[in-house]
Image 1: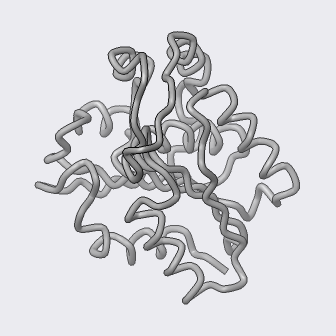
Image 2: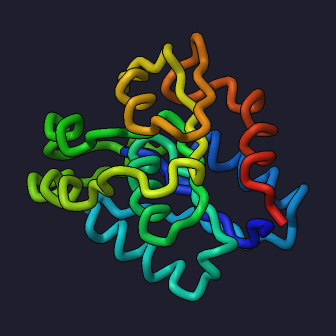
Length: 194
């Protein structure tokens, strides 16, 4: 079944202005104009972020929707995909953000707008823990693009978490997937957009 609705989830301190989000939005608009595209600005609270996503996709046809998530967005994307049984593309996904983000408690700046600040509260770590999706029910629903050169997350943890999924393991690369254009065709092929 072709994908008619596509959700894109940015990472920690990121936004819909990220390079990958903008490139995917352009590709979808140019090549798949019938696809419903949504890339919301996620609130710092993981619980609020998930509530926003559930509410925003409530009327979407779950059988023909998919989600793309980068870094922390990949963690959220896994929670969404497990909830709805839909396809997911994960770009250097965070595996244990409760552990990794505990050191960021306090005031943070937004990556794309350093003037924009937000508070990462201690309770957000517990909210992340509560959102962990557990083992993948249908690993074939996932494509994970993982860079061995990721300077933020461990590629071995990522490949272990998504064992059984389609994995595109890059020898080099970086956390931002600066060479995203090279991977876009594989992502679009996997998604099979309407």
